[in-house]
Length: 173
Image (cartoon, rainbow, N blue to C red; front, side, top):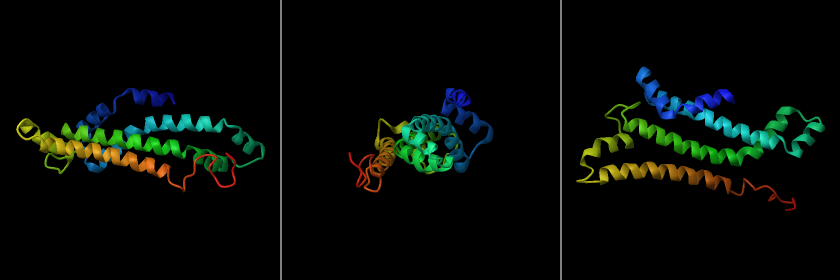
């Protein structure tokens, strides 16, 4: 995890600006770059969650029974991690969305004539005091997309097919 700490120390926007200045990525390259920038933070969350779950007595019992390691990892640990990971995906999506919007606002990673909300905000900024809606509306749409994605991830965690711990039929609370 120590190499990831070094990568986390570099701000994601700085990384995007440096790579975009040297490679001029298009939409696919920007997507890959933003995805790679989110990996270290997500890896820390996955690691911390997995270590906490792997220390539970149930995992020790599975090991004592001679269960195969991958069945323990996928069948128990990964299933126990799904709520935390779903919440983290919503956070990472929001951070990635804002990173892409910031880069597009700065003119990095997208063409100046691209139909992009951040580019719309940048192009309409000079007339902000005269007519604020061409700036406010795209900014609100970025925020609404972020909130909508997080609400969607929250709703999937409250779905009846994803029971909370102790809520399974036949399992006492």
